Length: 267
Image (cartoon, rainbow, N blue to C red; front, side, top):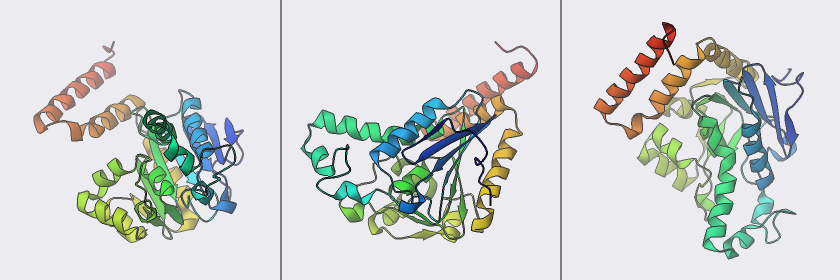
């Protein structure tokens, strides 16, 4: 079956990440299926670069992984004393100073932060394993469409680490504190039915329908006016930081902008 970006010239294609753009729709594909799209600092830098290279015309980004797994987590070479060639090992990172270590982790996180920009809607199409860093990358997106074979797991704590690639905030927001603690501390698998029931996923479909379903969702979002989508997403993202009355005021301000724009009275 053809992939969504098969016939497009990539804007970026390196370190296991390919970015293609078709007008208002961008597709970011993890392209190392032989290693189940295992993640490394080079991949994280490429993901961050993909965000920087998005043209202003892009409104929706679909994130997908080639092969049977979306992403099986960290490249296990990172756990070895010698690490990955050309990259600091975990031992090297541990020996660095506080500021240097903080900066290194902040740099890793950059590949996970741009997916929730208010001017974009991001959709993760997730099949097979989405473990650790793979789980957190799926959580970085606004929406998740999953295949019926999906297996989410947060394994960092089991390895003596913590989830540090921006996944803890969306996980708690989606499933609540108690379930998030249980998922992280046990490292167990969350399958498709539970993912949909708990809000981790928007919909589960047969794996053969995954790309098409993500494409249909993207098309439905693109059918709405861009400014209205941006205003609505901004409103919804801000709910957690506002009181009920503050949210009411934010709704009024947003609607005033939309009405004036529709009437040709916008700034």
